[in-house]
Amino acid sequence: MTHRPYTPWLFLAPGLAICLMFTIFPFVNMIVLAFTDASALGGGRFTGVDNFVRMAEDPKFWLAARNSALYMIGVVPPLVLLPLLIAMLAQKVVPGIGIFRTAFFTPVIASAVVVGLIWTWLLDSRGLVNNVVEALGGTRIGFLTDSTLLLISSMVVTVWRGLGYYMVIYLAALANVPKDLHEAAMVDGAGPIRRFWSVTVPSLRPTMVLVAALSAVNGFRVFSEIYLLSGGTGGPGGASTTMVLLIQSVGRGLTGEVGYASALSFVLFVILLGLLLVTLKLNRREEQL
Image (cartoon, rainbow, N blue to C red; front, top):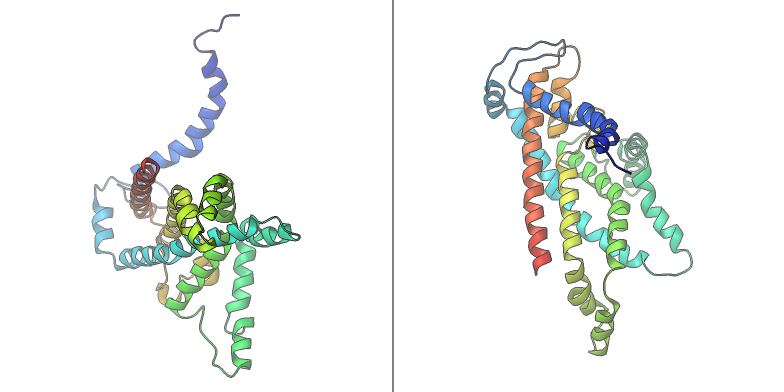
């Protein structure tokens, strides 16, 4: 049976059309709009690099970039280490381990809105945590009304939601750690802690780099946690605004500045691309060791 040269392209055409319509075209359109003064009502004149010059002079941009960077720095270490420790516990085959794994994975599949409502109920000035603090003789803490505490509270929610997801990645990686290395270390008299640092960690290093990359990208483009805990305001006076929250606030509504929001999105894309390239380089170096 013979095939015409264009036959494979006929099978690929539906997928390519969907990719072109929902991925490539919006991305290219975003880059084009970044160099215009387009509004939500359409149109827009070519303005060159005016949006980027405005961005460099915009204190809101620098505040959002700083908050996003702090957010990334705050969530990456716990999201690299805690899921690893949980995965090491969860890989044990003991009665009830399924419940343990499910408990940590449930936040991953929970709706962001539900998660936001739960944590708002917990951390609100009249919430459960503050009621406990007051019952113990303390004063109520402004978890959601202080800009710094709001960022930290959002980081806690991000870490809490990410534990189960990264735990699954580590569970898959732990299954591939050679058992003979552990057995050889045990014969040499190495205890559990020594085997962890000398066998487990070196074997998981590429996975840890991958988890660091994923959590860094997700941390830098955080949106739902800050948006939900702050009620969509970005904290008091917008002091806890992050990059994605700034893009959303600039580009939304009939008065939205789509051109400027596109320029912000383009810069965010460049930053995230840079993070990924650095991580890929680190991962490649780990694999060569």
